[in-house]
Structure formats: structure tokens, C-alpha cells
Amino acid sequence: MFQGILIEKDDAGYRASVQQIDDSQLPEGDVTVRVSHSSLNYKDGLAITGKGPVVRKFPMVPGIDIAGVVEASDHPDYRAGDRVLLNGWGVGETHWGGLAQKARLKGDWLVPLPAAFTPQQAVAIGTAGYTAMLCVLALERHGVKPADGEIVVTGAAGGVGSVAIAVLTKLGYTVVAVSGRPAEADYLKQLGAAEILERSAFAAPGKPLARERWAGAVDVVGSHTLANVCAAMKYRGVVTACGLAGGMDFPSTVAPFILRGVTLVGIDSVMCPRPERLAAWQRLATDLDPAKLGLIAHEISLAEAIPTAAQLMDGQVRGRVVVDVNR
Ligand code: NDP
Image (cartoon, rainbow, N blue to C red; front, side, top):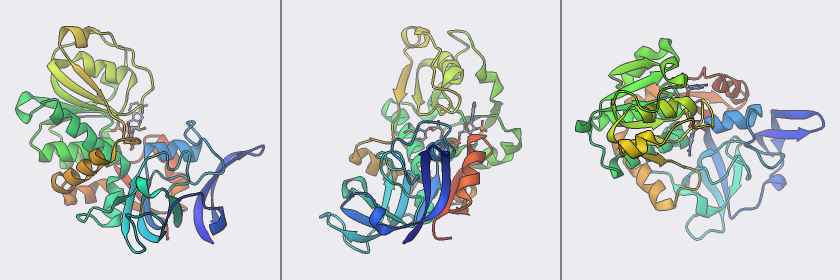
């Protein structure tokens, strides 16, 4: 038996609770992992609270991030005792995830735990942080350099936003943070933000084009915020869009793209090919200051993950949440 969060949906409704689960209930897979830590991402918040249709099979163990040690393996790349990490691949959505003491997975989804990180640090970065790095890599790939001007990061006090600010400032970029939480201004400055703008200035419908300001953008909010960011990009600026915290719609015009040559880059971490994942994790090892990671993340127990998921959905959680599944 092992302990885990189980999401159930039946005539009694949608609910998440900590339960004792029998090993025989574990799904198919060629690697069994003793999980040490998972985390809470926006998607885990949607899954645990039922606020979004993330879970597509019931019952489901949520948790899109997993760090742990291989207990048994039929996969050629992994042996018992190996330290491993997993982000995405539908885990916590269609396949049981990491918010439990055990997981059975496809070995092809795993990556070796990067040597630079403890399991806690790896999930403190987690899907949110690795997605932030995918955004940074996309900005670089499209030629955005620190000298080109300011980078705007929306949803700044959340998981993706926090890591994006920490990494971009370490790389020498000037970052302007957009946040709805004035109380987090000091935190955002400590991460490296040069200026903080109020979220509400981006939330209402805007003009197709605005004064050119941003050389690059990391947007986790979507909807009018993303449209307003695109409208204020400098000539040939680059926007990375990875989130929908403010809405799934994109009420923009083609003006920024056809008149200013703006590039809009979509970022997906879930099915991101393995070489790109490994590259992102390698860059996180060199370009994320561990001291800032300490500032970004805090740790909770498995049982605390359920109420914390509701707080995350209310936009009340700062940075990243590590879940120690064994406490
Ligand atoms: P968090 O909940 O940690 O952060 C989201 C932040 O967005 C909040 O902290 C808040 O920042 C801001 N926010 C919340 N609600 C609203 C709102 N209604 N309008 C405007 N801003 C809002 O989530 P994550 O950082 O983990 O994820 C952010 C987004 O990125 C999510 O939509 C998630 O689904 C997506 N994502 C996508 C991935 C991909 O592969 N494409 C991978 C990982 C995440 P503040 O208080 O500072 O304003």
C-alpha cells in the first residue's frame, strides 16, 4: 500500500482526497518509481479542484511533476536506484501522476535527475520552471538579445513568471513584471524585476497597436493581456505564449504581425521532444541562481496539497510549491 491523492468523479460528485492505494491499482508502465517529491502547477490546481477539464480518466492521481528513485525497471535505460525526473507527457491527466508515494510510468517519459539538482530543487523548478526556460530558449532562438530592450513577463508572481524573471535577469535582460499582487513587489524586485506594472493595465480590451515598448515577452495569462502585449511589441519583437491564467481566448488583430513583424511563439512543455527538454534542464542548471530558487519555492505535505490547490486557483500562491509526498 502507498499513500496518494486520488481524484474521483461519480454520482457523488468530483472530489480529491488522500487515500491508501494498493500497489495492484498502479497503471501499466515499465518503470516503477518511489516518488520523493512532486509539485503544484496551475494544471494540478485545475485537476484537484475540478475547475478545468484536465483529468480525462477516473480515478486519477494528479501531479504532472515527479522526482524519485527507480524501484523496478524493465526499461533498458533505467535500473533500480536511479534518480529520475518527469514533467508532463499527460501524467496527472491521462496517466497516474506524482502526488503519491509511488508511480508506474513509461521509461521513455523519464529523464535522469539533472546532477545539478536535488529532487526538491528539480520539482521546485518543475514543469513551470522548465516551461519558463523553454520560453527563454525561444526568445534566444528568435534572436532577442539583452541590448534589444525590455522583456515583459506576465503572471509574474506565479510559478512560470517567477522562474522566467530569475533566469532572464541572470542572463542580463531587463525585465518588467506584470502582476495583480502589489504585496509581492519586493519579492519580484528580489528576483530581479526592474519595474512592476499592475495587471489591470493589461486586462481590458486595447488598441490593435500601442506604443512600441517590448523587445520580448513571456506571457502566461492569454486573452486581452496577450493581445495587449502583442500590440506593444517593438518592431520584430518576439512573444512567447505559454499560458491561459486569464483566459483561453486571444482577442487580437493581425496588426502587430503584419505591420511590425512581431513573432508569436507557442510554447508547449507536455509533448516537448526529449532533446529540447534535456537542453532546457541543462540551461536551468547554469542559468537559474539556486538562491533565487530558494526564494521562489516553499514545501508542503501531501495532505496540504488539496487546500493549496484551491489557493493556487485563486491566484494566492507565490512562486512554486514543492510537495513532499512522504510527509
Ligand atoms: P501560477 O498559478 O503559479 O501562476 C499564474 C499567475 O498568473 C498568478 O500567480 C497570477 O500572477 C496570474 N493570474 C492568475 N489569474 C489571473 C487572471 N485571472 N488574470 C491575469 N493574471 C492572472 O501558474 P503557473 O505559473 O504554473 O502557470 C501559469 C500558466 O501557464 C497557466 O495557465 C498554465 O496552465 C500555463 N502553463 C503552460 C505550460 C505549457 O506547457 N504551455 C506549462 C506550465 C504552465 P500575479 O498575481 O503576479 O498577477
